[in-house]
Amino acid sequence: MSSITTRDAPRGFSAGEYMTCLTGIVWREGLRFLHQRERFVSALVRPLVWLFIFAAGFRQVLGISIIPPYETYILYEVFIAPGLMAMIQLFNGMQSSLSMVYDREMGNMRTLLVSPLPRGFLLFCKLLAGTAVSLLQVYAFLLIAWFWDITPPPIGYLTVLPALILSGLMLGSLGMLISSGIKQLESFAGVMNFVIFPMFFASSALYPLWRVQEGSPYLYYLCEANPFTHAVELIRFALYGQINWISLAVVAGCTIVFMIGAIYAYDPSRGLARRGPAGGEG
Amino acid sequence: MTSPAPIAEPQETPRPEAAAVPALATDGVSHSYGPRRALMDVSFNVQPASFTALLGLNGAGKSTLFSLITRLFGIQTGRVSIFGHDISKSPGEALRLLGVVFQPRTLDLDLSLTQNLLYHAALHGISRREARARAAELLDRIGLSERAGSKVRDLSGGQMRRLEIARALLHRPRLLLLDEPTVGLDVKARADIISHVRQLVTEQGIGVLWATHLFDEIVAGDDLVVLHQGKVLAQGPVSRVITEAGAQDVNTAFMRLTGAQTMPGGGA
Image 1 (spheres, rainbow over the protein chains, first blue to last red):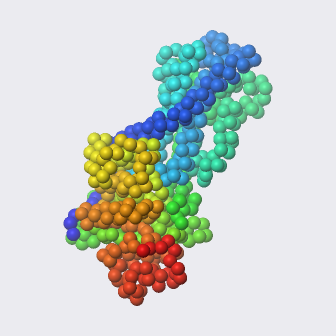
Image 2 (cartoon, chains in turn purple, orange):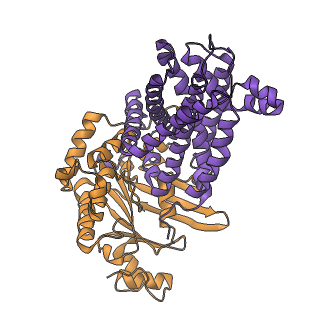
Image 3 (tube, chains in turn purple, blue):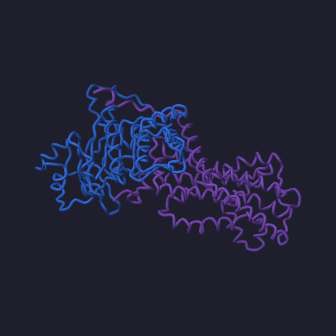
């Protein structure tokens, strides 16, 4: 027999191969996103409805005093813009994980998981790809919001980018962690209700926390403990060229915890294996 | 976040007897879903440049076995190795040598043929330029060059399967697994795919494990593994399995081995 039957020495993977894999996964996620135009439209319409209708109606009800990072009195629209940016990422993170549930049912996930590169790296690439898609949505929203007089300083558009990447990773890995425990698409709808809405409403996205504290101290503590609050605050400060260190620490810490959890859950000897035959088995 | 790439340890240089390393070796593999035992002590080899048919009815455990070999599930008991690389200990090296065609379709329907191939190549770390060249070459071989830019959604079932096989070959694996690849195809498409895969065995020396419940896909020169209710009932060259079962053809041999009265899923 020729050399074809001999066992060759393991050669590992070069940095170039890792990069190729990462760009390939991001590229594919981007292509899929472009093909789902209705997803893009609904991702934009959702925050815009909040901005145009909810905020317009609420601006008379809720006065905002001067709180950091704002240096003047601001309109309510300006206040909720960072919360809506985080909301875009929250929905996107959950939708990406919905697509993982769907992918797994349809078998596309298998294509990803039989890649020879380390599985943790593959899932990380998938998270980055989902985050990249959320950035497109957020910047499209910021562009429209600019015409609605939400005009952060020009440098803010740049300084918010790292904050958005971090919050996108946190929300994406949370979604991935949740998706690993879901068997079917139906149960995902429940998760939307039990995860997205509580996270969004019990946060500083729609009202400043000092107002919440006046109303109910318990709700205030709940909001403070909500990682989503810190994603919103991280984005809010970054949009005005500032860093909220506490929020940064919370978001970074949660990202690491959620990501490790998600990678653990997708480990072949746990996660998937618990679920019985993956389709095809007659 | 990335676990470090397997470090290239110094390996013993291939000795002459290393030529005996099987393309695929399963050794005492058992698997349970809770109380239900799907595989029991499954051991068999697939040699390089051979066509091994894994014959079993639906529910025999074929898909579970495939999920274990492709590392979708973790191995509970036993050992699986691909060209000597243990799938649990060095999955990267093992998966690199493995091409898979799963039973459910796993293509991105909204992407083009080329885009599907490029995505797969990226997952194997193949550079874009190299991937384009290989994709064009493979599309040419399966006669779909002209469709390179169309959406996969517009292909027929047989064409999709051919594309999936091409995709599985993109990273030049030396072992190819196919899980009932002809299910749902018409006679012509089935014949095309079978002859294409057999050609890969003879011309490129690829070891093939072909899971099927269709007797007429097996020919005399093949190796055969009969899997029934999670156990390997017989294995070896087709002619030997038939003789040992005291039968004249695969069909009868299978029924003698399994004690089946009827022949669900039918062959020819």
